[in-house]
Amino acid sequence: MVNLETTRKYPTQNLQRQEIRITNIKVTPLSYVHDGEYLWRCAGLYVWKSDAALVQIYTDQGIVGIAEGSPYRGPDRLKDYTDRYITPMLIGANIFDVDLLTNNQGHGPIAEGAWAGVNNALWDVIGKALGEPVYKLLSDDPEVSNKVEIYASGGVSHAWYENGEQDLIQEALQYKAAGYTTFKFRNGTSWRYSGMDMKEYLKILSHLRSAVGSEFRLVIEKFPWPFEVIVSELCPVLEGLGFYWYEEPIEPENAASLDQHLAIGEAMPSVMVSGGESWWNRWQVRPYVSSGAMNIVQTDANLTGISEGWYIGQTIHEFGQYYCPHNWVGGLTTIANIHLVAGVPCGHMCELNQTYNPLKWEIFKEPYPIENGVLTIPDRPGFGVDLIENIEQRFPYIPGPYYKKNPIFKDHDLPLWWS
Image (cartoon, rainbow, N blue to C red; front, side, top):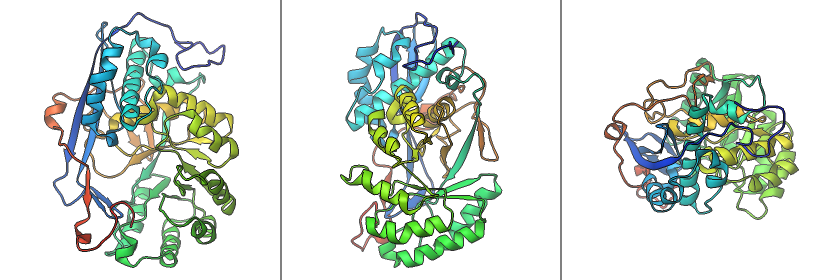
């Protein structure tokens, strides 16, 4: 149980410590390969498969924890890194030393994902050992809710060279009818190939708003428009149409990123600015939330881990901003992100990928229930889910990148990601 008399300085501070030791760590790469033309498409790419990087931590008390690190780092590479470096280091360690052992240990892309997956799985073990859901162990609120609002994250199938506007509007209406309050979309397939420009795009945004009504919340995700175009042309329209937030308008690696985020926020006072999905620690977050350059931080537990995610949540809360994690892959990532959203005081909403992917819920015996855009975390220990039998046989790993170039662009010199 958690002692709520004092505010803790680190996530496990007030947890009742037990003598439980790690005996083994196993990483199992998984894949789902789509039978159709593509799973989703955006800019110049086609996505033909989804991956997962299942982490299982075994203990001397027979408790097994599950989670994953970012499969975008390559499940096979995460397995190799864990087998080489993490497992030999952690065998025999006490699970309640999770904050010391695994918090923010790696600084390269593979290390970040591998350590995050182990950290997340250790929190599942801790929750099971203490008989409590992870979100309750993270929170200092005795009345913490197990209800988390989900937003529909999609907008990755409309093609401007087909019926892009109609498809985008129809998708938004579909989510509204399903009970979601918020829809996030990307910017469609190649602008260059399709002859799309900002003037035409702004008209489409206006048509979309008219179709869904003023109360349905719309969110637009990043696109590499010039900063000057964003501020002078896009921001006034997003403000006028009452968009909910604008996600990662500027790449955070840009030296002028902080100042430009501030300028974008000033150009649309009622629209929030978000970002940070690729960050892995609180020090990257702090300057953006302390200055008000970001109103929503989207760090993902499959790069931060639960422990660093807790610190990030305290940092966001200190400056009155919101936590709403990036959560685009499968269920093994969702279980960690959902508990973080519920367990930190600034938790707002959680993203949920709307494209078909059985690695989201079909890998669990009893998936989390979602109704009218609200996910209910079950009142069960740890993350509260168990894996199906023979998961590795059902979803064997297929090596290689999850994307390929959109075949319609084969005779055109267009970049893969942004075009």
